[in-house]
Image (cartoon, rainbow, N blue to C red; front, side, top):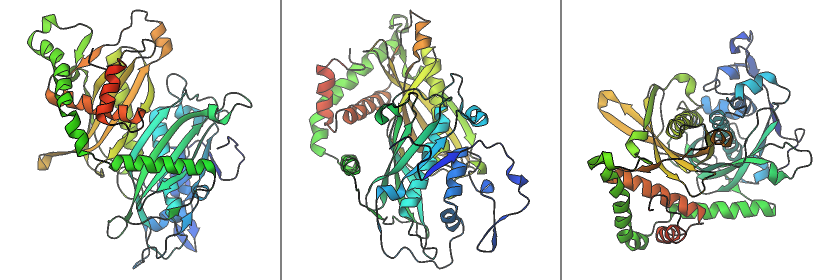
Length: 459
């Protein structure tokens, strides 16, 4: 994926400080007045959301106002990754207003805002892959099912042009795996791989817009060796997500009990003898933060549901604040682990976001790790109900320049007070181990952690 601003298919992004209501005349499509794209649902989010949805406006118009009695797509097409590939260019170096829209306090790109853009781009790519270019058929509903992983490889400057490139790399019957790369080159002639600042994988699923049931999507045929490799890797990840082993659960059962006891032992000291507790440790419940909001119409996507990128943005902001309050120094984002979108969030929903520090890693004193969990609850007070819509796991470290100013800095160890908290910690540790160990079993991961002395809690 070359960083070439003038390459075909590259969409330039410009700042958005114009008033959408300034348009005196409506655009016309096939002789009919069309609502300005800036007035469609979700248009306030970012310049990227605006330009992506403008690019795919014909498809989105069918989604907003599908033909009456339209039939579903009759025959699936076979497409290549190249046909769904989209790249967007942020001209930070020349567009001062755009630069200010994305600047964070440390002169880098705001990660929360970038997460919104990534979700918007992935959604547009999924629409492009699933489109059959037939205006008479019923369009599919494409929703974010999960985020496989988002990893920041290097800081992203807000003063240098930025490019995001993405395409479909694998499809199942009704699911699409989309890979995105954020590219920023600070040196002339630098290698493309060295220019990749962030990678992300989004999983979208297709639903019939009339029945709401799972719908088949166009097939994917990789062309190049790299595309074939990405296809195979994505297929392996899909199988790994679906695999469940009863034997593995039995194999680790005894070890699980021992690990729970070890985690709970120090927590009991905090609860029963707080004066004797380790001052370098802290109870998990004492790291919690929370915020809440009513979901507004301006935060919805083209399907009328709350935009997934908006949820990730709000979750990131809370996670960042939690890490900041916990460490006492400015945190630095590293990655978002697998995220499942369990239920949709609607306009008017009362959304509560709750965060905590699940665990910390101290093995590398120069780069301590802080794992933050953020759980989004859709609360309905009139029904006395609360359902989890999303669970996010963010990993942070401490900014080097902040740590350098505090030579006595030491990150604290988080311990659980209840069995439920201990299980949450173990589940997250095992999930990260399986991802970093290419699919090893829980039991193998547990032994690996023990043998390599990388147990995050078992000291």
